Image (cartoon, rainbow, N blue to C red):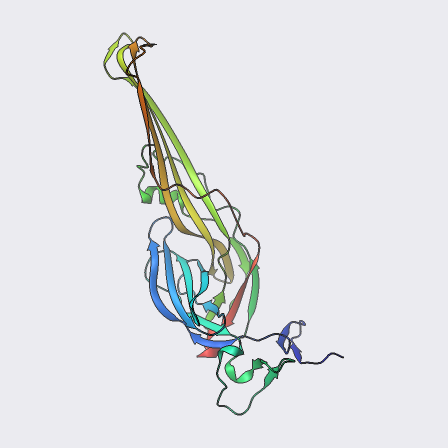
Length: 314
């Protein structure tokens, strides 16, 4: 014989159940500060927050600008203390407001003596109407596009990563996105979106030169002939994010790291008119800069974007 309690909406979706714990509003997360960031390649900010809860919290964030946002990590730094990291594209100091939700095990018994409480078969609470249960007003399944850049990377220097960050960044800045119809009806919407997808792009540029360092006699080199080769690889690493654009949600990319690695090789030969001598030849090779990530794209499947009306919890 089965028993318990389940409440569903018109679409048959479960709202309250004695078999699963409902999340409730735990409060606003404590802002810890900006952890990292840069202004090139589309801009990047990483903000830290703290949530105190005996069970894992579920954070929702606001989007105060038209940039992309996402939850980069949720981790327990010590017992009952959780660190939440939110990433954002763009520049400036605007940061999201973060509110946390958790199941009833994170709460003390409310003082109010009336309401509805649902228990599981072991007597544990799964729902308490007195604790501001989480309200989801929209769910959108979304993923970032397979493309990142609208055009190929071109025109950068092959020599020792000489192209500036801004020059490289104009081409490594993500431009592509997927759009999803999702009109807002709340006055203060907050979102849950886990930045799981990641990808990488690079541009490789090569150059070489050969010249006579001593005497060039009628097109023939007498003495030292120098050959030089340069390779520079400009790269950027991205994670997924979402932004609001009118009645649409857009899933795109946030640049979270970038760099350039260069390779220089020089070879000198001695001889006359291309006839090499058997002495004093030498060569050397120098590599500089940060190596790129492995060219892998991971976790680009659809993940849920959840929306809740933050004004309900003020």
